[in-house]
Length: 298
Image (cartoon, rainbow, N blue to C red; front, side):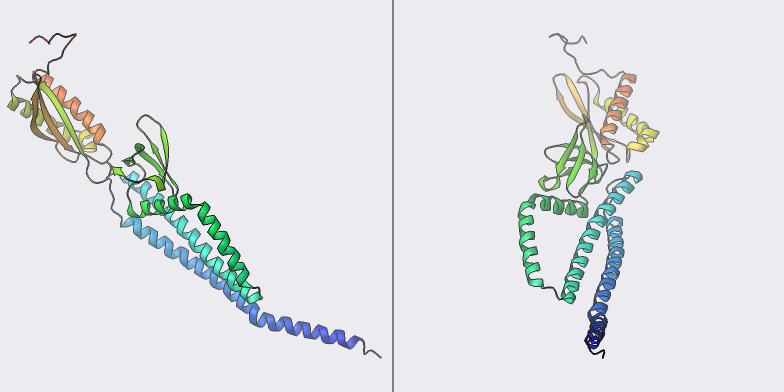
């Protein structure tokens, strides 16, 4: 008699039926959850890429330098895309994992309670990091500054070399590299946005004829604007505003120049050099110079 083997066969059949039933319900649900998560992740990445590209393409471009503008746009796209991709992936896969756990019959209440306590502890310990990241995102979205801009951030000023979600890297005029946390940036002075204006004061002797000085400087500025260097640095012919002051035997003539962004400092040096050359060629006397307490002879 083979009756003792019957319960094993029945148990095996019941087991296969139970597994098949579970796979037909919960198993298919788990597969559907994973497939849906993958599809949502791919869709989210596509939408994020389109969104960040649209944001940077429609942002106000503050520079005429195409190469630097491209670098700035590319950095903003890469940073924002990386952040949004990471955030969307974490959210999608977290929700998918919780749904899979529910299908597996695991208790979610203790897991959610533990995650809540852990997240609260991490949040208290990472307040500065969260502040820096949020500030970095807002800096990029608002396009307050970008790579290649010359900015004043209060504690340091210089050319922006890199903008990340946590820190901004500057290189000052003396070559020092500054790393500033984005959460600590309270004000931004950007000299590279819009049209920077260079203000140049040229001094000559007070006895010089003011009309002649203005005419000489006006002609020199027209020649400079037409030169290759002027076309690269200036947005028009510098304007000779006129006499700014007469003091201590010197007459100061002020010049205003609309410059290409980030070129205002170089343009100011070129304008001074051209003004001096033109004044010397026209025989306009320079301002009096004191040498060990004695006035320069007339």
